[in-house]
Figure: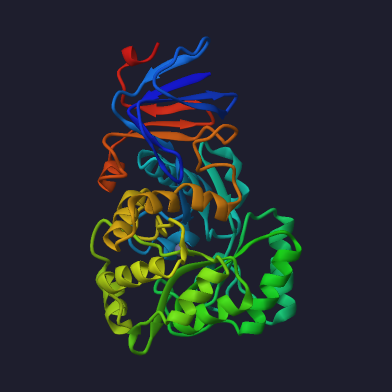
Length: 393
Ligand SMILES: [Zn+2]
């Protein structure tokens, strides 16, 4: 039993004025109390003026990717031992950023999915994304062509107990020979994937850069859209009808924001050719919020040096730049993300999983407070803390 004393809290949706004490028992949250009451039998941890909030969730990572440029291309070269080390390193980086749950949206040959229960953090996984022959990320092993093969591919994911079906609705930047402006599947093919997945109780999320592919994914009834870049031959365009449709269907949109440096030149060239820029992206993210589109935090962590694992604080910073209120931004990485993943996390209320972080300062006022994670609790256990031991009784 833990009693975490803190300056204030964010409960996954709202700010909770402090001081507060979060009490955990048997891996779940037992109570969130005002003030610092005595809690008999509890280990008291004094977090001082820190803000406590639910452990953060990154809904789009690639744990097999090593946070260096060209990471996805090198996947086939990794030995099992090296891959294990890469996965551990990635999770460690997420932990430093306060991320206690990740969803892996593309591994090679089920390598992350099969090992997903070995880790301290909660790892959900899709396995290899379903893609067209030689389509985006084909080397992960998820090629399928035609409705029968697509149904078989979904059934294989259900048998392997995948947490989600990831389908590549458009090409991608990282795979030579695929075009971000192309659609990889017809609307009917995407509908088949959704139908089969839903019949097995699995959600579907679609990687979609081109506007046409976003339209198709929405029409096919997907549960989530990754990137949602809305590329056209006139740059990035998000029509009002599309935003309304995304909001109406409550599709979880993961904008894959966040970066710590400029992309490498070969990616920058592609961005320029496609009419993409961070400023335009941030503009679309803000407009989608204004239209009621539900955003969830996801970073595409691991795929390159600018997109290393653990960049969630940067991604949430981008959302604030887009004009989204801090509480909504924080919810996108806590309660909203948890809802999209169907996990009992992301909320600081009795009965929810006791995955809790403390940050210095107040992220409801200044989102950059997320860069100073001081304590991480997973399942009611303190996993890391920078606190001196005398703060614990
Ligand atoms: Zn990705």
